[in-house]
Image (cartoon, rainbow, N blue to C red; front, side, top):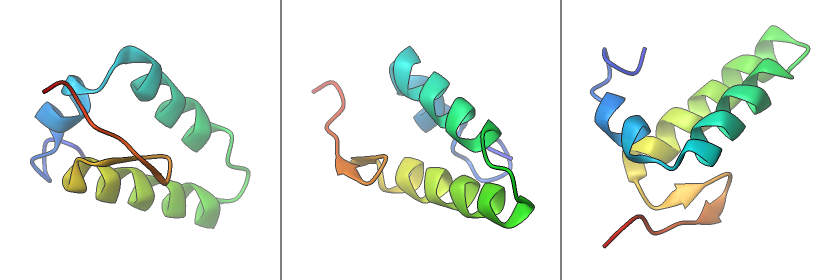
Length: 61
C-alpha cells in the first residue's frame, strides 16, 4: 500500500516510535470501517509530511 502510493520513503523516514504507533493504532481497530479510516489518516499524514496523529510534526531539518 505504501509503495503503490509512493509513500514508502515518507514512512521509513519517520522515527521508529511513530511507525510502531501507527501500526498498533490501526491494529487495535475492532471494526473494518475504523481500520480503513485510520489507514486513510495515516496515508494522508504521510503524504502531507507535517502531521502525526493529528498533531503538527516537523521531521529532521
